[in-house]
Image (cartoon, rainbow, N blue to C red; front, side, top):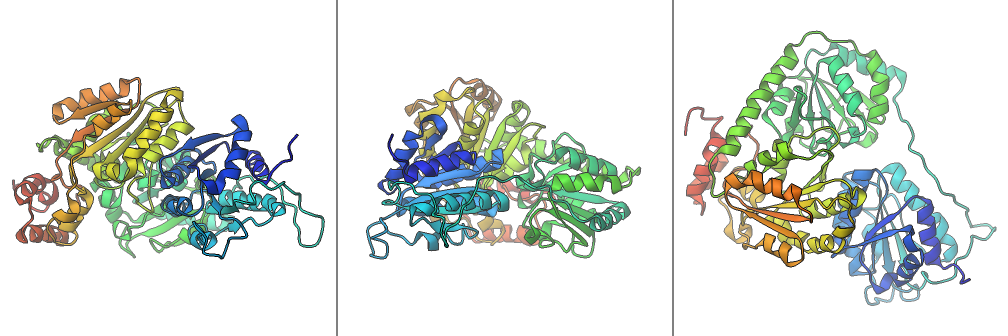
Length: 596
């Protein structure tokens, strides 16, 4: 029997840690690891991507959807550098991801050799909690154990670098001498709860509140029942940060939906009217959408102390996991009987639902992008997994899709990177091949990198138990979110040189590679198009020709932003006529009621 190599040991150790799937792309800098991966047989599933950045996005998404360690693999030099954006997506959203990269031979390091990059220095920020280069076989054991345990325990990105000449050396156990260590496998998530006195202080603040508003984020994903119980006890309303979309079902009358730039008017009204804020597992960045400082008392729960009291000055800061902390907090809370606050929230929600329906039904040239989402929402299958890219599509995803219990949702949150929608959906399908998956992306992201990853879908889809995998593309030939930011945030007209995109037949590309393509340029065909896509027996690209002049910016736009918008027209926006028609009701209507 051949002697175990460093590569063989590495994969065996990762398997002992529970890793079963690797996203990556080959290269000669990792040939020793790839040979060992091949010898490992069916212990692992290797997902071959089209670009290493997509492998890192998929590893991040795998961690988000499963709670497991995400693993990505790349060769030396450019392969490793390509990982960085996807790794920052994981880093900024507190996801456990291990990046594995090849390196030139140990004898060549420092020689300005081909594809030699100082990888520990490059990874040091994104994987700052642990990055190391293996230099001798006896090191590998503790490097793997530390990288995995730190990634899982701290919810961070870690990175391991393997010189190519080390990978095929015979494995050696650490010697029992001074300077060697003997590490082991294993980690279990602790139950972290605050001290009893701190829970009492938090309960006092919450019990004294008359108008309690809750904000939930991704840190509350495992605490749906506990959040509902606390909200009912306090008579509270709840808004959802973008990464917390799946935490609460939208059919609860006291759930106001998303918050912030992509938020709803009821969330804005609730935050400006509340007297107490309870923030649960969220790093929501935009403080201007929270209560004005001094207008509300605050309690925050987060497992990361660095995220406490950084968005709003909280009166009580509780370090702990949300589920366990709420379990301890609930018995200390008094049942509120006054329904006036929740009655107000329900009324705001009813008015907002009517407004959204009117806006989605508004005429557009040719299709109103909001209607694409409102037609999908009632057709969403049970247990569907939803992903969105960044850009204007994220606005409609946040506001117009009503989620139910059992659905999963995610996107690139803290990094808000373009190009994550399709790789997220691919990772979701590999993790849950029996569940339908829908990605919502813009044409900018499709052209940037998502079209290539459709080839990955074409390569693997036949092995999925449920073939329903859909990517819906908003084709408006415009980098739309930034166009509207130029107009409304800066007061500048659309800069055509940077904003206009070429028209690409995405549905035809899908057909070219063996997927199903659907094209819609008539709003009346949207409902049937979604039905067809959801009944398809192979993955689908649903391309919708949408109007770029339907504004994706928040309904609670400020007077300053409205003035900027008008200024952009005065300066001479190339699409001035259609902009006015598309935006007058939606951007300025609430500032000038009754005006057409």
